[in-house]
Length: 122
Image 1 (cartoon, rainbow, N blue to C red):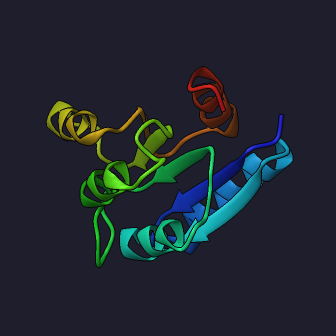
Image 2: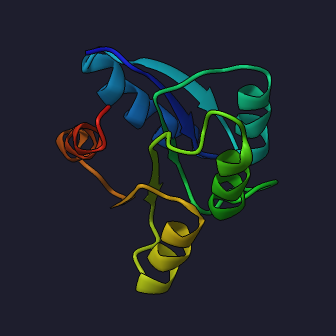
């Protein structure tokens, strides 16, 4: 089943890796290079079934981004997946508290990413 997914990462290489995995699985992909750009796209009316975001980004980090998205009408229950190099329990707990639905530590495999999205109903 095809879903629209927003990838938020300041690394063009990482966005390309995620986009490739998602497109091969039949998903439509939108991209943003940081939380601020992604938030603007959502506020302008972009509708997605899931969001995959990095944690450490310029302008707006992943935690602030998730907090902001959860306040938008219609985005309270959209799955938001953290894809980051951070693996500490503190960071994961912080992400969970603001509304992250899942957490994948980089480097990741396309199979791992798709399996987690499937678990989240995407």
